[in-house]
Image (cartoon, rainbow, N blue to C red; front, top):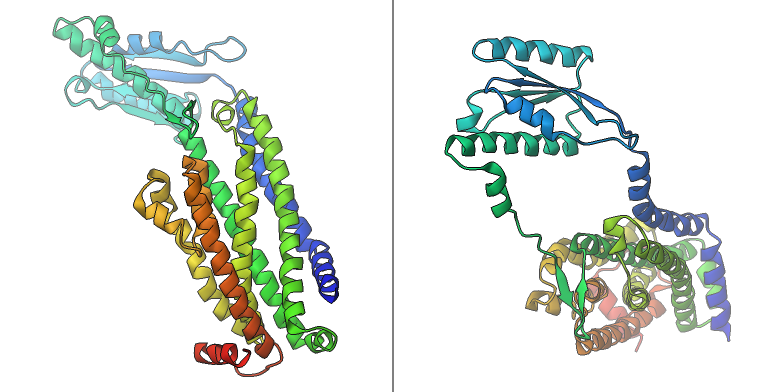
Length: 421
């Protein structure tokens, strides 16, 4: 029963920390921003009229551009107030320079210069002070391109409207077949973003709580509190109490994040924003998130606990912690390869290796719904690795918890392991 007191103490201490409260609130806020900000931007983006001058050296192209720009504002007013100026020959350069000066003075918002050579080299000019508004730039690119192509086709005796209708591109919709055989429409760009979010949450949670448990042991060794605790506890009870107590604190935090995620998913399913409406997150994904967090936490926390027991100072512990975090970075580095082909041999093998499995298998579950035997096998391998790492950590913990001073090397850690048999 003494171990229950350690579990309660570790849990209460961790959930009462300011860092716990801040991070617990911060991640849901970031998740909410991911869903809400697109709607906010869509509602509050400034809607105004643009003053446009088209300087046309070809003749007639500027008028066609002006006729095509029929976009309207929410108020019903035309979005583009277009003035087309035909400037044949040498007059073109003078008109172009004058209109660019008007942009500099704020009298004109956009100048489109269409030289006569555009019919052969396909180059026109778009001048504005708001160069970062890519949507408007793409709109003008499309309109000018259509006008120039129409002029080229007309010169060859073709009707542009007929050619355009015959060459209308196919709108290909992407779908996938689920494990149950149903065809589901998917927004793969949104799904990829979802994978990154879930993997990063798992990475940050596992890393932060693993370092927390290591730092806790180092601090208690430094303040000699550990000696007081061991006067009434066995090293095994102390280790398991810390492991379970800190793990429950992490599960509490992740449960809050999962509940917020479910609420956000429900909102996304009814959202009018196209990308969000396709972001329907199955509740089972949150269950897998909790499962793989728990398994990943137990595996890495046993390693971090070994570091805490072996080191006497925070500086020494940080050097060992760097080695432990290296395997956690591998899934982040290879995530793009997995996203592109989650069923490849490379992805399957990585998702089975215990050090990589928590993040890699979670990503595959979101993207692909892998066969159940692969999920079960990854869990079984993780449980085996957890058992071995806890056995190793427990023996090193038993010897190293009361050793101060010199930082041990790997050979000494193995010696402690053998000594504690």
